[in-house]
Image (cartoon, rainbow over all chains, first blue to last red; front, side, top):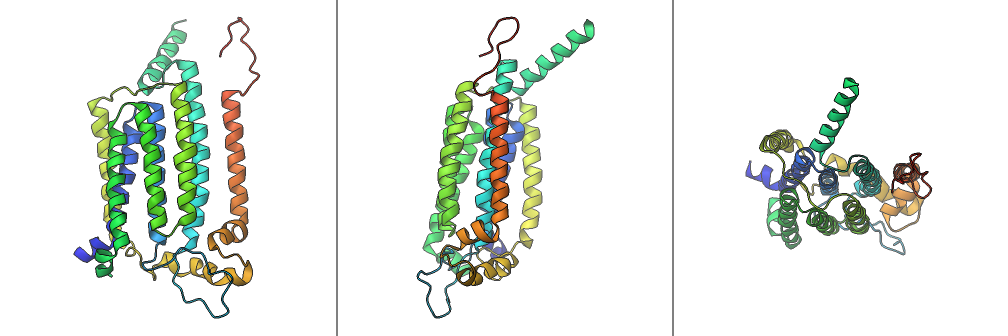
Length: 132
Length: 193
C-alpha cells in the first residue's frame, strides 16, 4: 500500500492542482478569474500527461548526432505525449484569446464582468420587455 | 523502484517544484486582486515549465515558458486592463458548493489512481508501443536527431496543420468579436469606443 502510493505520488499532487483549477472555475464570479482558473486546470492536465511519459533513468528524446553506426542502447523518455501537449499548449492559448475577447465584449455591453450582475441586467431587460 | 524514488536527487527538485505549484495554486484561488492573480498564473506556468524540463520534456518546457508564461500572461493582463482590476467576493454558499464539486471530482480521480502505472515505469502501456516505435524509426525515416520534432512535423504533420487551422479560426474569432479597426458608429451618433 505504501509502495503503491509512493510510486504514484506525483499523480496525487497533480490531481490536487487540477481540482484547485476546477474550484477556481466554478467558484469565481469574475470572468477574468474564471479564465485564470481554466488556465490553471489546463496546465495541470499538461503536467499529468508529461508525468506519464517520464521513464526513470531516461534521457530527453533527442538522439545522438551524427547518428552512431551501432544500435543506440540509451533509454529515452516517451516523445509522443510531448508532441500532443505541444499542440495542446498552443490550442490552449487560442481558446484563452477567444474567451478573453468574449469577456471584453461582455464588459462593453454590460459594464461589468461579475456573473451575478450580468444575470441581473439580463433579468431586468426581460421583465422590462415583458411589461411593455 | 521505490528506493530510486526516495533517493534520486532530481526527484528532490521535483518535490520542491510540486510544493511551490501547490502554494501558487492556492494563492491564485484565494486572492481577489486580479493583477496578482494574473502574475501568479505566469509564475505557475514557469514553475510547471521547470518541472517539464526535469521530466525530460525539453520542447514542452520551453513552449510552456514562452507561450504559457509569456503570451497567456500578456493576453490576461490586456483583458484585465480593459475590464476590471479586482474580483468581488463570492458568497459562502457558492464557495462551499464549488468546494464540494472539486472534492467529489478529486475523490473520483484519487480512487482511479491505483490503476495508473507507477511513475517512471518503462513498461507502462503508454511508453511501450507507439512512442518506442517513433524512437526506433526516426533515425532511418526522418533523419532528425530530435524525435519530438520528427513526430510533430513529419509523422503527425496533419495534426500540426489542424493546429494551425485552430489558431487561424481563433484569431478570426477574436477579430470579429473585438472589431479590429473600422467599426461603424451607431446611428444615434454616439461612438461605441
